Image 1: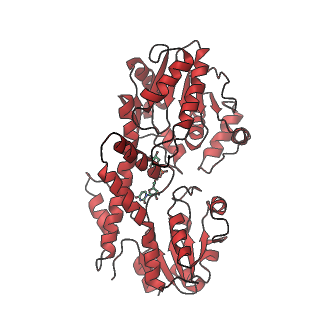
Image 2: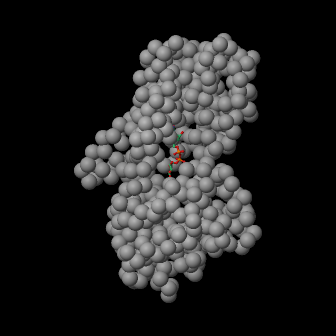
Image 3: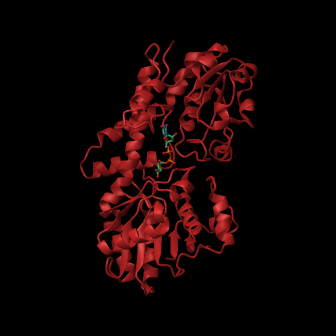
Length: 443
Ligand code: UDX
């Protein structure tokens, strides 16, 4: 199988490189010629652990070719659609890139002889493959889906920061389509790719496959919002501690312990976009997605809990120096999309505070986004120097190692708000630090 990947963003490039790692020849197509040049010279356009090493190996082995000429006939057997589906103002997804790439692929199908499979990896709401992508492909190709070429939904579940691992070891593979033979072909391909490690493959309709992606992400986000809601209860209960509650419920196998880390809320390129999209989709078809909407509401309020705690420590914020450790939406990424640091910074600035931020990876992106609104530190110690209060916003490993003594020696006043539950409250309190944390009640 020779593979084309249309769209070299985080999903497309990881998909392309991971197929090369398995020995497949891949052509990556992206309309952004600067991005294509960067990739061709072995530089990943975004931070993703072990992606760049894999990219260089793929280029050295001659397995990965890239082009910005989307009309090129890549002579491949299958094409992955991995372009972005950004949010429209009403929360629904914008299908501009999807339509564009479907039209491009449709035109290339015109001159193809063999049976070509088109696979939709981009996150799209139910009905998009059948009602949007298929008609465009058929119109441009003058051919019929299921007869002259194949079309399947094949959503991805890649986590940022773990995307290469997830591509290599998926929990399950979801394939949606209307032609049994397309579903079987794709199943056979994945059996070849993953061999003995092939996970369960679910073959279903386009719409179910598309919905599985949204149902998956909204369930995970709901789980986090749920534990954050419980954290807010704990915070107002004498002796309450969400860590204990999460452990207690997580041991029930029907609940499970993952995604029960209480904190300042979820962000990133997927959860916020996907929950808004499925909620807007529900509205469009006359179904209220009440639990999903509630998860969104909890999450909108959660970052402000950090500011409340800071105020509880030091009162009026005017002129106070607040140190934020962590800016990225989660550790091991430089991604600031929908990061909780953004509303926290905006609120602190509104209240007249002076904000200093540090992040091991996200400072270049933060400088573009925030410009001179905040100061940027060069290390955690530089960040907390002379600060009146420090907030842990992202749980980078590097922050977990900072001892109470360092906070005591470096800060103007030793106030620490642990927004991600990375520190032992009693160790910090015994050391003389005024310490509070999400989901931790008064002692
Ligand atoms: C997510 C999905 O996990 C992935 O399958 C999908 O394809 C894309 O969206 P990602 O956005 O990379 O991946 O991040 P993830 O690790 O899932 O975390 C999402 C957010 O939830 C982060 O902001 C994270 O900090 C937060 N989170 C996660 C918590 O606050 N607590 C938890 O227990 C888990």
